[in-house]
Length: 121
Image (cartoon, rainbow, N blue to C red; front, side, top):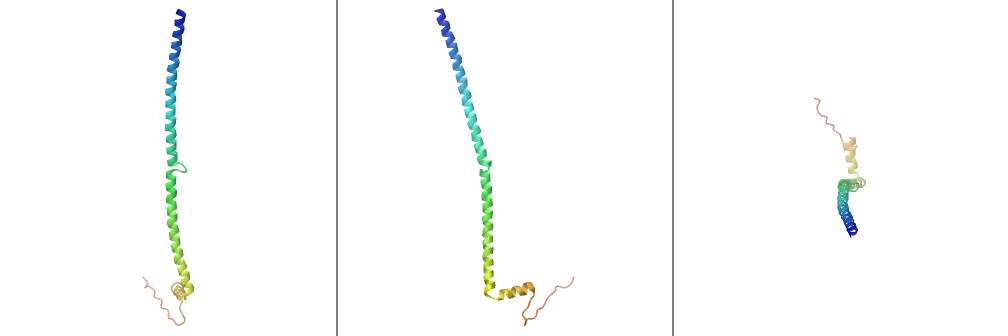
């Protein structure tokens, strides 16, 4: 009978050791999983903010797109005014004569040109 009790004691000790070890392993696994989850979440947040396709990059690209849209609108309005000027120059000679007088200093044959110069200092 004594031999049987020793075996039980040895088995109990072995089970206790194994049970304590399993509890520690589970605790370490839970901590490792929690740590890995936290690190993954941090990596996702950092990547979504600062990555190549992150929020900061998206805001910068939208700002550039808005600037380009404003530039397109300005160029379209300039283009429209130039088209009007071209049509005006094609239809009547007055704008051409005005430009010749103002920029080239030309005059019609029956006109007299007066040139006013500022006095010398």
